[in-house]
Length: 86
Image 1 (cartoon, rainbow, N blue to C red):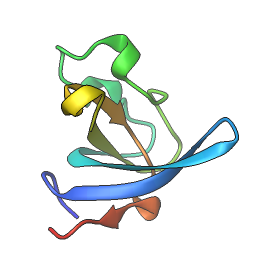
Image 2 (cartoon, one colour):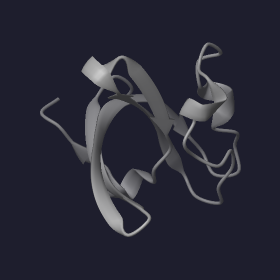
Image 3 (tube, rainbow, N blue to C red):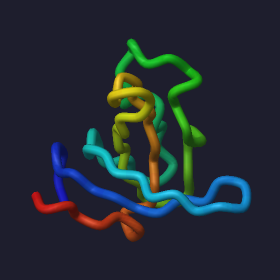
């Protein structure tokens, strides 16, 4: 997987699981700030992850909202991502 690839994964929120699909923006090594790679124009409420982790992660932009007009940013572990026909 590389920057620009489409990926998906399942995440848990509350009591339910949701499949998320988006585009890889950056690789985030362990103990590195993920938020530093999010575009400056992103609203804080659209950043859906903790800044640092003890594990390597991948920053993914996920279109959401009506007609995909909002972009949320997630930082799942690389091991949970599935490539989507890249």
